[in-house]
Length: 354
Image (cartoon, rainbow, N blue to C red; front, side):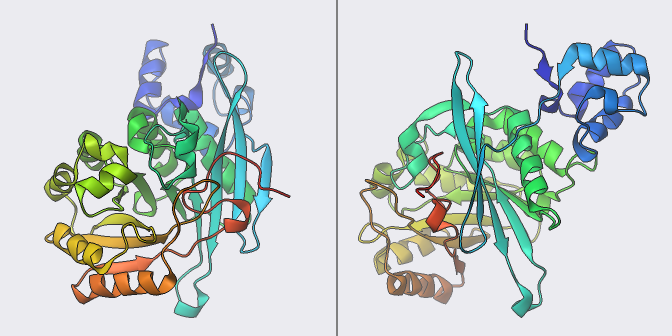
């Protein structure tokens, strides 16, 4: 039987294993520090642990490192990492991560380097404006495979420091909740990769039951993909709306016990002639009334046979102006990495054309 990868374990689960084998629970943090913070390549390299414990770890777990099979570089500095994961019945499933640099010297803020990671191979949510949806759901990722992308991104970024993580890559994070929750713990822990939860964002299409659980169990930021202002419109664009319509989604967001000064981000993909009229903007204002939110307007990034066109920039600007006139903080996300198919909605686990 194949042993479990130790990177699939959070602190409490490894501490329970330590207790079962007669080790004090504090050993869990030591072991996890070797695995993640120090990047040990195997258990024998964990020299501060007794040899007997190292042998027991090697007999009980594996320690595998996820390495990209291909890295593509965009003209704007964005880098896309392609990985191949094993499938149970043989073969591999491809996934992608994206490193996105943002230079803020003009504003006096520090430079940001954001890693966008995947939580599933493919996606089963069926959103019409997303290339990943065309793949369908292949399988969930394990915690080891999710944090493996973080480690690979940190390695590729060096000597620059990774500052932010967003779970906005392939898949719906809240449909793989337990694995994502463990990966978030590892990514943010001092013994892990040390990324502050304030700099980690989880994006969801709106799986209502899991939203409240995420806020209760983590301190990360929440982003909700809305992209419509009526149920009929959202049913067409995002089939999840038939299970969790706008009233249920917005009601769940209103009930969240958000810490002071924390806001929910609403992501709105701008589709020409579909959801970008002034009337849509005014409806969005009414829908979001009373919520602590910011709105991220996302220009549609084309992919083959998408069936949509992006809104002209003037239309996006007009939409933004209506939101701002009503006191909503609305920003426009600049598309990054389009030339390597790394922009929002374009991830389809394929090498870009030469």
